[in-house]
Image 1 (cartoon, rainbow, N blue to C red):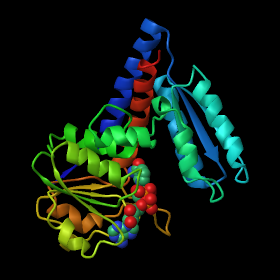
Image 2: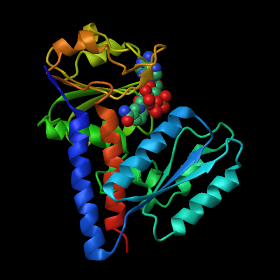
Image 3: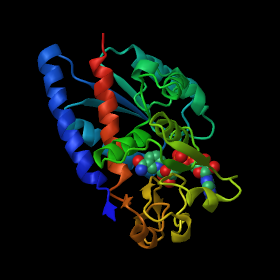
Image 4: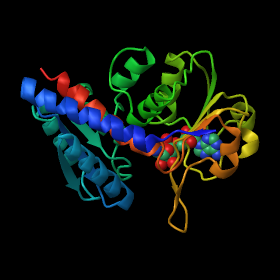
Length: 281
Ligand code: NAD
């Protein structure tokens, strides 16, 4: 069994991005810029945004965070997005989710200029992903694909199973695996017999948000297991959706939590911001 070290891989990618950013500044006088919209005071969202801002700084990317109170109106968020769409120094716009329940999240995400949609959540980019065209791919699934690539794991011809079917994790993950010629099962809360699907998988990707969901008996011997889930236990520790201790011995490769997919997500955000800056007219 080999552990897929997302932390080291992400560090390497971030160093490469920093060099590319330096070149972009030198050759074209462009400093990539990322605008983050952060609404409310959810501690996890604040922590994520802080990590993203730090990562930008280290890579030489300019970033600005628009912090807004939880009771902000839909139109005020929309005005900020419109302003950022027009700002020539901003290449990427990221709205930290979840937004408060009185806000229409879809409407906000659809307002972002698809060319600045570095999270890849806009239907335009999702459509391009489904059709195999170039565009912005959501950072977490993109990070998973980079991990597979770095460890020479080719999805072509493999049976893959994605557990979790959200627009930001499961669906784009499944699309990427399909584009890489895997045969993909997509499972969700209403899947009748989850284990019947997971047991068939050569590559099992789990992004649900339920600690201990995937147990040893649900995993095929020699499978590649990618754990996207993040769950905080009562003692404060972080775990994924996979019962790591018991599942790991059965796997050929497995990602740990923390230190697996999480760091790759941030590295891919920087990558997407750099991509947007390079495409700046
Ligand atoms: P979500 O709540 O939007 O979606 C969860 C999905 O899981 C849904 O499709 C739902 O049908 C499915 N599901 C729920 N219970 C299930 C069950 N018992 N069996 C099978 N499927 C079930 O969540 P999300 O935004 O997609 O995030 C999923 C997880 O990934 C969360 O733990 C989140 O914190 C984590 N996440 C991690 C990163 C990272 O960088 N590592 C990034 C984004 C999300």
